[in-house]
Length: 538
Image (cartoon, rainbow, N blue to C red; front, side, top):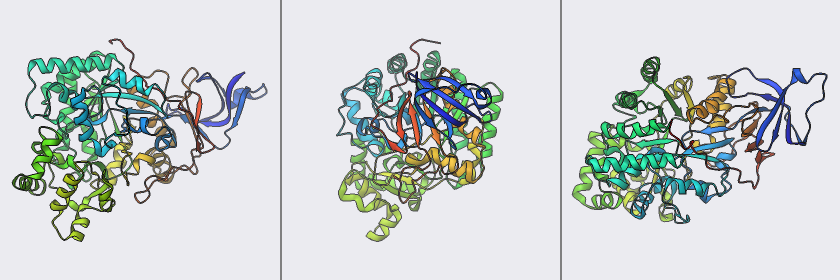
């Protein structure tokens, strides 16, 4: 007998087609048969060792988080309910050009410091890998959900060039090409960049194009956090489209938003740009999270010249009064490249996490609020936090626009990505709520998308971008990465006040045919593994 039959489910299969009622049979981690209600009339229904009554529940493919920052969280927290409870069965790591492979001892220490605001310092992690393949092998020891990996271009540049703002030499460019090729051969699905983060932002288009040529040779895709989501955002999107078309490389735009006051209501202009490129043959997808605030580190707001040379050099500049005043002027008067070319508004910068417990009183308050209470300027407060917490503070940045969020999520090439930072005392609720928030708030409550269409955005479309032929659909032969949710009650539990509350209305989640959520509770299954790109050129 087969392992499991899920009876009388309303199947939303991920294709965008209308739902249908069926029994779905799972065996040895795969979907082995689907018996639709009409076909079952008058004949014996399928049987299995276990039968699950899904009356009133929607059965869909597992959700794919196209933009995740769980690179250390998956190793640190075997439970990982933040994602498993949402129905996420696969996360894409290595985002925004900075992660933990490939590295050597020097760059590992530098990267750990640079993105401590995303993942913590990692003092509780045994960093027993250096290459992409070794990191994926570490994931294969057992994790809560499946994970794919993008090679981080900023980390590659740190390894081959360093943290200096200069062009790579021909020899250094060759080394970067080699590192990217090796990572793809070892199973990475593509390349990411963080072009408002150092050192990745120091790369010119010609350098990025050469790396994208390598990615294209291996059948991967390029996922840039591009050079601006504020002033010059449309030009930054256009730059990425042109660059990848030159390299003949598929493009996936990370957290594709139009933020800050300069971009209010301008999402249609972005979509027009993309539609024109798609009509001309470009291969483009994008992801978004269904919230208006962004989330990153306080140090990311600094002008790039202040971060040149790496974290220790940035701390030295912050410690110098004259240089600190130059930084303040760039932030507040000019608009630093780290803040997307827009003069910073301190009342939009909320501290969401710190590494030093002595600074916990700053969490949950804007820099403006804390400065007022301390009787000092906002920059004095921000500088204090950066120095005292050694660049680790994480922030929420309240600069988004709801009409842009709704417009972009309707586009046919849209996929879901949480951009979820799990570190910090008060993280962005998107880390715990993105996927049920789509289904509950935007589908059921507002009707922004039909249910079948939204599920396709969260399942088959990302699977197609990742070139995973046996995931993202409820089809016979596909892997049994499945979610059962109640369309009447599914909702994000997380809020900005209580960001770690788990969602409601998702009683069952299976990964590789094993229950990771059962009766609404996390089991002890570590059913996830690394999902590797096929190891051959295309």
